[in-house]
Each structure stands twice: as structure tokens, then as C-alpha cells.
Image 1 (cartoon, one colour):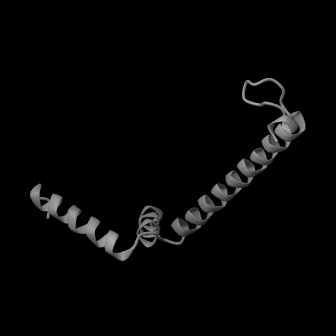
Image 2 (image 1 turned 135 degrees about the horizontal axis):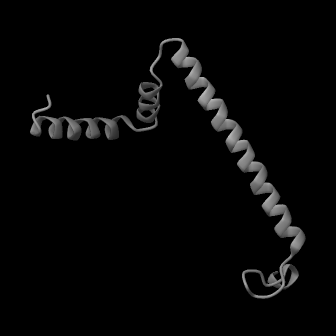
Length: 88
């Protein structure tokens, strides 16, 4: 198989067409990623204009990704640290 495509990675021949296609595919995905990031930014801008706090929304999204037990453990540790520092 390596003989069909060339050696690659410093081993000599490179299959130029295959390499070009992989690079172009990665470039398209990077563009899509940028577009999605822009869409997400727009959603948070809309939320802010409607009176919601984007920072808090992002925190809620982060919590929703976690298992309940994982989040509860993190909150217990945070509370313990805050109490130790006299912040609650």
C-alpha cells in the first residue's frame, strides 16, 4: 500500500493528488468550523440583546455536558474551597 502512494513523510515520493485532496478537505472543514463559530457568536449576541447573560449561558452549557454526579462533586469541592477562604 505504501508503494502505491509513495513513501510520504520524508521517505521520498508523495502522492500529490492524494495530499492535495486531504489538504483541501481540511481547508473546507476549517471554513465550516469558522462559519459555525460565527453562528454561535450570533446566537450569544442575540441572547444578550434580549437581556440574557451569555457568560452564564455558556456556564449552563458546560454544566449540561457533564454527568450529574460529576457536576455535584465539582460544586462540593468549590463550596469547600470558598468556605476555607471565608467567601461564603
